[in-house]
Image 1 (cartoon, rainbow, N blue to C red):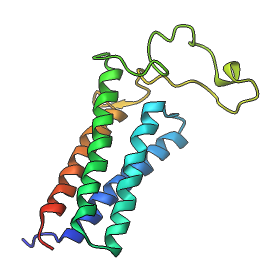
Image 2 (image 1 turned 90 degrees about the vertical axis):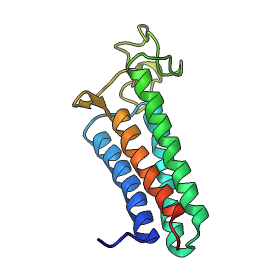
Image 3 (image 1 turned 60 degrees about the vertical axis):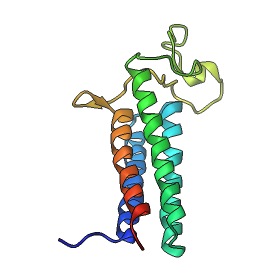
Image 4 (image 1 turned 60 degrees about the horizontal axis):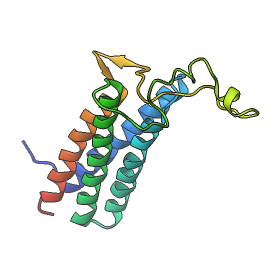
Length: 157
């Protein structure tokens, strides 16, 4: 079996980030509004996509290491978010906690004239499949993408 080239690996890794980011936007379009921590996890994917595109023009190993770093960051954020959802540790006070005083309030209640529909708490799982939340899947898939970036970085040109 023929081994993949560095360019093919970078394409796979950046394409994986693109797929995860598009999936996040699809879930949002289907009505699953993201919380603050969900939004944090999107930015490193955007960086990984940009690094993959930059690699196509300037094929340097440094961009592969930066891609690995970006996916490591979003994977770590996904792991942290998973822990917050499962109540293993406290999350940011701006979107977690008892939230009892916020239950039932909409964004419009808090910000009159705002187009915000509802406050999404970071410690509440809004969707899950096979017992894993979107944050958990981001953690797992992003860790796999990080490994692909590392393999690409270590591969001879």
